[in-house]
Amino acid sequence: MTPQSRRLGQEPDRDAYRKSIGQRRHELTTAALILDVNIPLQNIETVAAWTRTHFKVRPKIKVHKCVEIARLQVAAGAAGIGVPDHCGVV
Image (cartoon, rainbow, N blue to C red; front, side, top):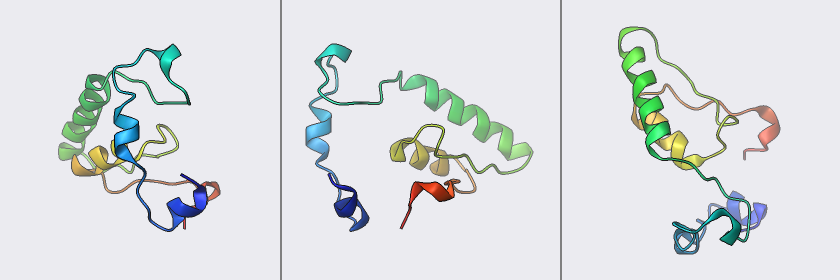
């Protein structure tokens, strides 16, 4: 996907990404986020539980650079997602 098509709102081919699930690192043909899904889910829940008795947080997407994780954070109660100016968001 080109940056231009991303700006135009076209979604990437998710099936192409799903084919990489379960492959070993050396089998991946491009850079990829590799993580144990349970760890970020536990971290998101820990922060969400804390914010219920304190104040809302606005996580920074530059930490993980993953839209799916950002969506999970917002669904768990984040006040939004912080994006640095240099990211070129349109």
